[in-house]
Length: 135
Image (cartoon, rainbow, N blue to C red):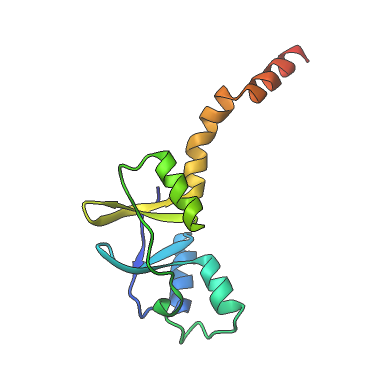
């Protein structure tokens, strides 16, 4: 999970992009921790600003942010998390605890957490290990 970055709704897209680049992050939340009005990703900037020729100085975050924001409780299990990612075709998910956003979970975070167990227990990879031992 990554820390969440919040920006006001009237922030220019240029400032949003500069914030993302400066913090090396792929998304920002629009609003405050307990009251977000949208989420904006680098993909949104490419699709909705760059490809449509919008002015990044006059276009505001609220103009192109995705809303409503889908989020998940901090105690959700992996099945719930992956279901929400898939059902909503999203890759970033704000995590809520006691009405406040405590971070952003990404599909990459979930994949990284699952891969070690997958490689340890999947029969295909056990066969590869045996093959390498024999070779």
